[in-house]
Length: 161
Image 1 (cartoon, rainbow, N blue to C red):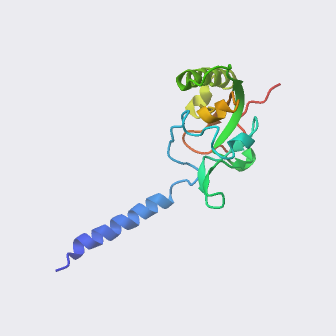
Image 2: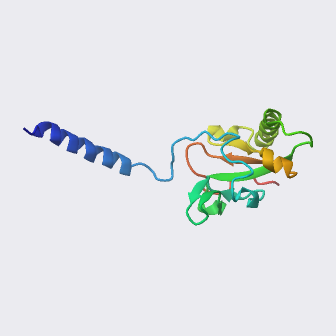
Image 3: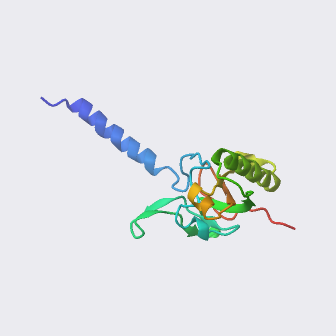
């Protein structure tokens, strides 16, 4: 025996949910916490990103058969923008110390560029060398700015006068 009223309710709820989803701005993504493990120096494509350049969040590429980071022109919108680099001191690989150095250094760069933190609309994270890239001589930390509640719509680097 079919229960039509509950079926109509399910259809109405589905239609309502679809209407609500279609009303969401596609340029606004849910907040995403990005930390020092979000992207590493071993993520394909990240070593091609230069200072001030924008790039996409990591995504699987069928063509490359791996997770990659793609360059994106800032003026076309992007997920992230490089805003500085730090050079870690030589020594043994010690991830906790490297992460602390990166967060402090990138945080100092961030505070100098955006002293008001852009009203909470921007945040940052560091990209660290991995144990393997460290063994190959990589001592560079990339500092990255992003918008936690959506994509960047242009370069967010302050103009230097």
